[in-house]
Image 1: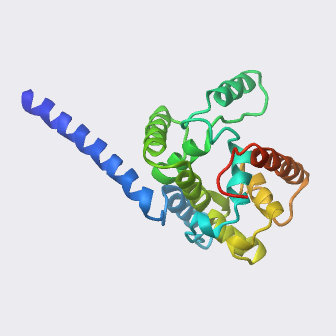
Image 2: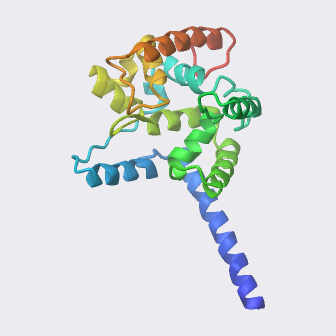
Image 3: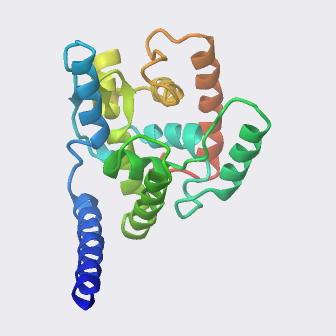
Length: 230
């Protein structure tokens, strides 16, 4: 019995050590592939479609400063202020869901980054628990600038398109640094469902959301609630 308990303890310690090491490594090295990218490739294959995976890493210094501002305005306006979890947003989302309104999440950019980089899609308690664990780790070990840099490089921005660099080339045939403020707002606007909404042929919802994000960007910049200089 003592041997079994010791073995379990050692396995738990090993798992914790490896996850911490994983987070530390990705603090300094590019994220080249994520579980979601692999899962999407299998889905494309199962559907008989050509496997498409467009992704290339670009440092935050090679992005326009308003790229982080756009996603913060769209996804997590309190990103600079919180420590990984926006409890006000979670409470608001829970109330709206209980009231029968359109289902929405309360996930922060930090939580989405943890999910995108380290985990798989899903809504199980196990995955949500691991998401909270990895969110805590990256908030502890990564600066905010690194979190949003990884987010902008790993987020799904279309069918087989991941990250701001691939999206800039696919949609407008430009480098990320050449994206306009409005283009960044448009990319942020399609994030709720990037395989459904179009950045180049936006419908009424995307146009409204883009304009709203554009206005929110100005507020964040004026109040120093974003990343980078402007």
